[in-house]
Structure formats: structure tokens, C-alpha cells
Image (cartoon, rainbow, N blue to C red):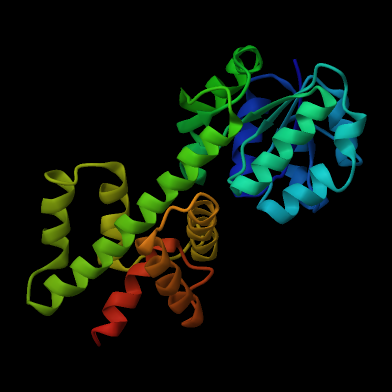
Length: 291
């Protein structure tokens, strides 16, 4: 199976590395060519332009956002030149509108489109432990299953509509942001009341909230370890805005998402946009005069 990989940011690079190290024939492309160099050293090939990848068997895209995705995949016309039978595995977190546009264009051209956004940070991607949410034609998903198994620990099928997978991803990210905000406010409260935040978080994350989000992010918030960023706060704002946009398109009010949007903006205004998105918790401490 000849695989093309578009987008070599932190996540994309880690995922593409897994595929190359597994012995697959991988050709990569990135808008900044320098990002390709580590993959080339491992044995990947480099495409001169994105369109070259669409002559392969499978193209995986892990582009930063809607703008990059539309620019590389829709506005450029590369899909028009795709090989018949191509499977496109889109693993970026995108808006509902963008996914609908991609799905429509692939249908028009007779190409298989699978949305496969992921849960996990760069270290999880490097370890091949991502949870991958897929939506699309079952035959196409079965064909790319070996690739998904290299990149992730489990693949979660949510139906034949690519939109379903993205709905899960957007909603899941909204839940994570909500958890970070609640931890930040709770830590600010117990600290002001004279309780050791570390002991509080140890109790919560090992009993009532014994889950990865609380176990991993809780200590970061308590210790204020916001750099280096595993997931930048500005991207957290992007993801909360994706939830708000999806809710608006389907008449679903999301008052908590609106609150998170404003708190994230406040954090960015205070210079934390490039910090880890757990720096969202600093806002509660700042508002209460504790930092």
C-alpha cells in the first residue's frame, strides 16, 4: 500500500513517523519543506507538490485547520487529479461545514472519504496510542485498518457519515476544555480556603474523577506547568469555537462553550496563547488575586 501524508506539524509528524517505522512506503508533503527532513532521514520520500500524493493508494491529511484544508484540498483542485479508487483519510479536527464540503466533493468525484479525527497529544501519537474516531464507507475503513492500527490503540466506528466522526471529536474536545476550566476554578477555590491543591487533586483524580483528563491535566494545573505546550491554548479556542459553530448550525445552545470562549480569549489577552491549554486554569487564579 502506497501512502501519502499531508501535514507534518507535531501530530502529523509523529503519526507519519509511526507509518515509516512500520516499513510502509510513505511519501510526505508539507507547506514548510523543512518539516519533511526528519521523515526523509527515516526513509520516507518527499513530494514536490501536494497533488503528487493523490496518485497513490491512500492519502492521509493532518492539516492545521479549515483554512489550510480548504487551501490544500479544495481550492487547489488536487482532488480532480486523484487516482480512481483513492481513499482519503482526513485526520484533522475540522468544522462541520468543512467536513460537509469535503464529503460532497469526494462524492462528486467518486472518491472514498473517511473522517478520522484523533484523541491524544503528540506523545500519545508517537507511542501509537491514539484513539481514532472514524466515519465513512465501511469498505474504505476496512482497507485502511492496518494504517489505523499502527497509529492508534483503538479505532471507534461511528457510522458511514464522516460528519458523525467529527461531531464526536468536536464534542469530546469541548468536554476536555470544560474539565480544564472546572479544575482551574476548583483549584483556585481550595487554595484560597487554605487547602493544599495537590492533595485535593490527588483525591479527586484517584476517586470520583479517575480518568486520563484529570490524572494528566490536574497535576499540570496544580504545579502550573504550562510549557512546553502539548496542545496550544490558541488551538483550544479554535476547538471550542468549532463546537459553538456546530451548535449554531443545528440550533443547539451551548452556554458553557460561550463561557469557555471568553475565558480562553482572556488567557490569550494575558499572553498565554502559545502555552499549553491547561493555562486556561490561570484565569481563575488571576481573577481571585492569587497570581
